[in-house]
Structures are given as C-alpha cells and as structure tokens.
Image (cartoon, rainbow, N blue to C red):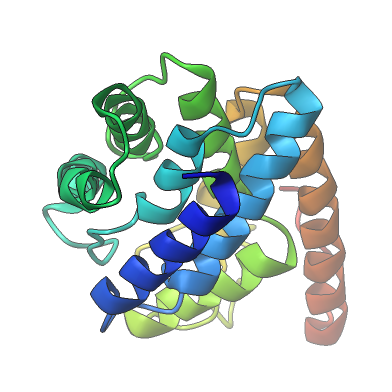
Length: 218
C-alpha cells in the first residue's frame, strides 16, 4: 500500500480508536506530527517510509494524564497496541518492528533511545508539537484539564521562587518547554524548534507587558 491510501486507512483506524482522547493527543495532533515528520525527513534527505507514517499516526494510541503513575509506560503500551493495527493493514513484519521502535523511543519520559532515522525523526516531530503557537495552546489545554491555574499571580515568571509546573501552567515553559530545542536529534528539527521558541518568547513578552512586569529570561 502506498503512502496516501495508507494514511487514509490509519486516520480511519485512529478515528475509531480515539474516543475520549484529550485535545492535545487527538487525530489533529497525529496529522500535525506526520506533517512535521515529512518536513524533517525532507530536510534530512530521508525517504518518507510506511514505518514512519504508521509511527506518526499510532504513537499516542495509549495516553495518560501527566500526573498518572503509568505515564512513563504510555509509549511502550502504544507500540504494543499499534502492532495489531498495522497487521490488519498488511504492513510487513519488518516495517511493523521499525514503527514500533519509533513509537517506543518517541517519549520524553519513556527512556528508550532512538536507534533509527525514523525514530529520531518521529521524536523531533512530536516534540515540535510542544513548541510555538501550537505548543502554547497544548500546554494550557493540558494544564486546564489537570485543574492547574494559568500562572502564579504574585510571581508569574518565577523570579523569586523555584518554578513548579505541577502547580502553575506557565512554569512548564521554564521547567521544560524552553529547554526542548537542545534535545532535538536532527539538524532540521532543531532549526524548526528554535523558530518556534522565538515565537514563544514573543508571547511571553506580550504576556509580561499585559501584566506590567519584566519579561522572563527563560
């Protein structure tokens, strides 16, 4: 099966399986991860493979809230769940194994190191979703679902306190998001990440202006 029919089949399968999926890990997220992966693959001179396509669409089959005790196992569980989906689409066993490794290795918390080009591209493609305008929207969506306030009203940019992203949504920028570009594994992904971080700094500067405080140095 060529890429376009396979993409449509994966989208149909994911639509049936994604009931109740949160807005940060829905079908639209999978569409964007595939678009990111395609851009990175092109920039790195890597062919867009069926394994990469499957990994992009099936990497979040299992998700947990960020405060869930099984959070670190979600990628491994997604890789396991992806196997039967790919088998039903007649994906060869070798490509299923490639896609499953990429899924296992994409997670920030899973601890599996990418060993293939597809795995490195998928990790960067997924991490791009945490940055830029999309990343800002997803950060506040996830924090809102967890009941976390937008920011500490007394010290929104953690100038005189330690950032605590378990309590304040905006603190996640300092704790993790603004540090992400240095974790990217491809040159193309890193360039895209830096561009998105620049957009986030503009947002933080605008927010600081509205709050009448200096912008953060994150």
